[in-house]
Structure formats: structure tokens, C-alpha cells
Image (cartoon, rainbow, N blue to C red; front, top):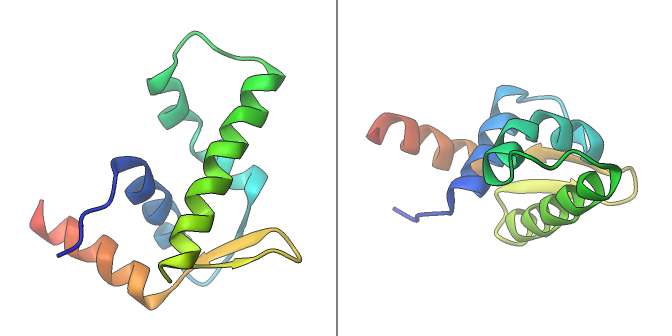
Length: 95
């Protein structure tokens, strides 16, 4: 079974929770705020939000290239694929 970094798994879990719906970059960034705050708990500025979005974009591009998500760049929305759901569910069952 393939192992992904924890942050990528968190992104997939959020998208899996919203299976059948898509999330914009801003929605995903706000949903991942606790994860970002765990890495740097004392930051809370607008530039940090842009930095977090840049990190998330890199993660989304990777997940899209690996076919775990579908990233629609024309409307800035992402949704999980069957492959992504299988990976997330296998992680849940193994833990």
C-alpha cells in the first residue's frame, strides 16, 4: 500500500468527507487551518493565508497528478476520485 505524507492524507480526508461535492481552494484552506496552525501556532496574518494556499496548491497538484483527486483549474474546485477514496479508506481500516 502506498504511503503519503500526513498533510496529503488530511486533504484527502476532507475531500472524502465531502464526497460528491467539490471544494474551492479557499474552502479547503479554511478547513485545513487547524493543520496549518499545528505547524506554526503563532502565525495569523494575511500573508500566512497566502502561504498556506500556496502549500495547498502544491499538494492539490500532486494529488491531481497521482489521480487521487480531480482538480478543475477553470473553476478552482477539487473533488476526490475513487482512487483517493480507496486510499483514505484503506488508511482508516489499517489504523
